[in-house]
Length: 136
Image (cartoon, rainbow, N blue to C red; front, side, top):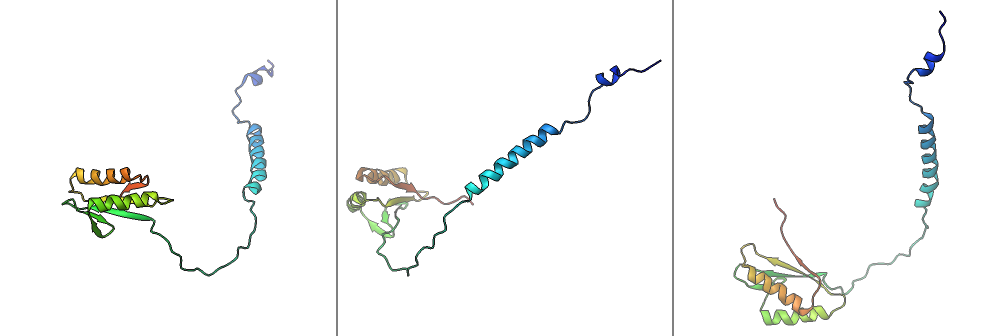
């Protein structure tokens, strides 16, 4: 009894064909080799050096605080509501506007913080933020 080659043709091939994988990897390697020099290309510039000088800089932000009793502080200085509105209007007229940070005591009544916030918004300030402490 003779064996034929038909049985060999019907057998399941158990090896992985690596040729397509190698082709894809070579194409990706060539793409990366072409694009990396383009990404790292820069112009060498020797910048001039100068001694730092004192400049008349304005603070980046103003901190408005409200304590438990509703007293308003401009940075560390106590200020009444009328003077606050005048100062906030002056700050709003500046270009670029100075950022205003609002600090409210945890036990302060909500109306005091909202009164401070609406005064700043009515003055025309757009750069407002709240200061909080991180959770322990």
